[in-house]
Image (cartoon, rainbow, N blue to C red):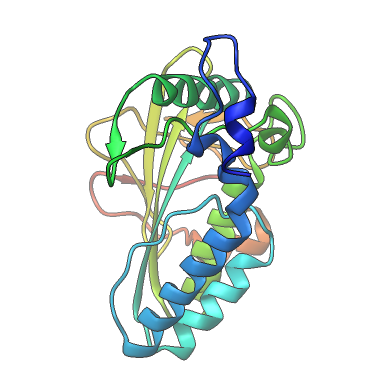
Length: 224
């Protein structure tokens, strides 16, 4: 495969780069990341894990792993954009990386290519939130329910380029973050719900996560 890539030339006159073959080794790279995470859990090491969180069973699996390992805290970072923005950003990263000329271990890797269809699988529609957003919220909720003190930081970017941020604390308070406008994407409708607060998809079943007691100064709550 590495040799065959040289026989295929794109519109810029260059052959397929190594980074553009990333999809072919995705399973192997995921397996390697899983082994590193397992080793970290076994020794109780603090670690940062980056991924799409696209599979709906991952939140339960991760919570079980953290609980079994005796972990006490979890921070989730969820960055959300509409499907059209995700596609455009992916294309830009790929094409810019393809022409960056940067070397990794003495080799030019190029940009990573992700197809539009692969990204579309993460959304149920062009105007909806991604499945990753739902899974991130479920991870946050499940971890707190399991006694793991968890918070989630949400960055929501719109098609027009506006950016909103929100922090959900372990007890359900909704706070502004880094001075950005307060807002978070709704996992039900896909709209960015702004100040004044509105629901982000956690309904009556999740009411215990958003108690009605008066929040501390500077905090807000999501209202059904």
